[in-house]
Length: 253
Ligand SMILES: NC(=O)c1ccc[n+]([C@@H]2O[C@H](COP(=O)([O-])OP(=O)(O)OC[C@H]3O[C@@H](n4cnc5c(N)ncnc54)[C@H](OP(=O)(O)O)[C@@H]3O)[C@@H](O)[C@H]2O)c1
Image (cartoon, rainbow, N blue to C red; front, side):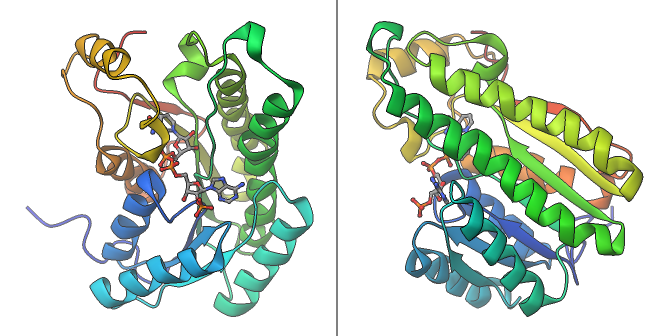
């Protein structure tokens, strides 16, 4: 059987926000492996450039790194303008940058809500907007945003985060409707519990309980999610838009 992955993204420019760790870093590797020129972003340009250097060395494709905070509206606009000028085009966006802070309802403070909404919701909308402006010139592109199983099913102690991720799913559905006629597809992945830095603070018994409620009886690996993202970015998903794809091993919350 022909390899549908090798070289399938050759000539494409893909931006992965939050590409320095976890799901974003795994995705950056898979997209570079498929031949894309990957732009890795982070709040810290040094970290982004270090991952980009790893990608260039591993896959030969010329990756670059850039630092900006997705919650900073002006910085996002400036960064995407610079990316478009440097690379001439943007074919794919993985709006992956996100933060999680747990708090029981009685303990939620206004600044926690602000942080969840600023990075996860406003950051996603702003990066989708900035990438779409560039994609519209060529009337083609593919965008994947990072929702979560908790956005659909809820999670005790994660009300603010879950609300932000429900909003991200709404971004995917709405942007898909608006941008579809311009040739741009927008989908979301909704991961279950994935083994990254983001979940290291969770108590062991909670993680064990979640695994016990997962049909496949294991935590997700960042690569599990990255493969789904690569599929949604690729031409294999050419007629798929506005979808929220669960990548959760059959976790029932
Ligand atoms: N892990 C899970 O179980 C899980 C489940 C469902 C959904 N998700 C979602 O998947 C995405 C990735 O999660 P992960 O587990 O891979 O997280 P992670 O390991 O904590 O990595 C988060 C990434 O986002 C970047 N980032 C955070 N805030 C940023 C900001 N304001 N501006 C720019 N970059 C920022 C970080 O880069 P720097 O620190 O270098 O700036 C880092 O590269 C998130 O949207 C998360 O909500 C994760």
